[in-house]
Length: 330
Image 1 (spheres, rainbow, N blue to C red):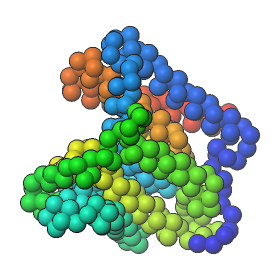
Image 2 (cartoon, rainbow, N blue to C red):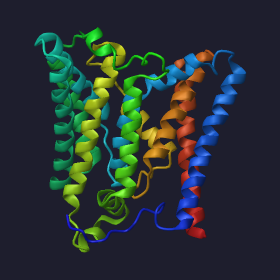
Image 3 (cartoon, helix red, strand yellow):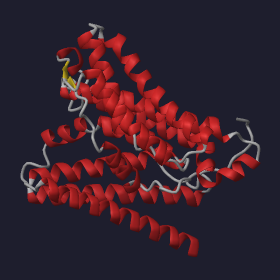
């Protein structure tokens, strides 16, 4: 890559863009507050410290995966393998600690490296071979899930107290180390996207990759790095989920990629590339978590929860499409 200028993200390019971003934040926060108030009226136990802690400490794995998914979607790609990469990374962690007797600090780098390597393979194959990321990551979804089963012999690996502390609330606080680390990842992801040349290139590639190439910028390294970051965050999410469950389960995170994409879409990230915000994705994750927790507390069945969550996603997409038509018309 060179230091040639690339187009700025729309939310940075002008004072009007900043106002638009603040409007988005306010809208998402308003939806979140509205959901909390609705479920508070429907359940006496919703608006409590315990529910707040439950919501916060159950989302770190989805949150960090959604940060990576946001970057992938912004460059015009998609990563369907994130749930399986989480399971594979978790399986590697479990085998290292249970079967080989490694310490947590020795096993975690291997877990993270597994996710990063698989993410890099997704990027290299997609970019260098010119195969759509949808197809490449769909294949990786199956390979990684199969690898998780093979590594663990389809058995759950119980790790226990040596890793539980990561997912348990810190004494005197509502939040776990995993949640606090996830917040740091959100802050770093937002800074990377909005305050670095790399982030400018990501937005420019998603907006018009051909124009970026014609301006002399090499798009392939940037795209590969984005997929590698996504894979690395899957490895980190594997550590977080394993700590919460105290086990490494090869069946973990089935369908998590859909939740991550949903969080990004609710947060306003475009499925066509070129537009997105990590902070908005954070709000999207919170909206999904509050919605699912609230529905569970009022006794909604799992099929009904899926129907309602799906409807929310469709409404978010329709609102985004209407907003874009309005902007083009204006």
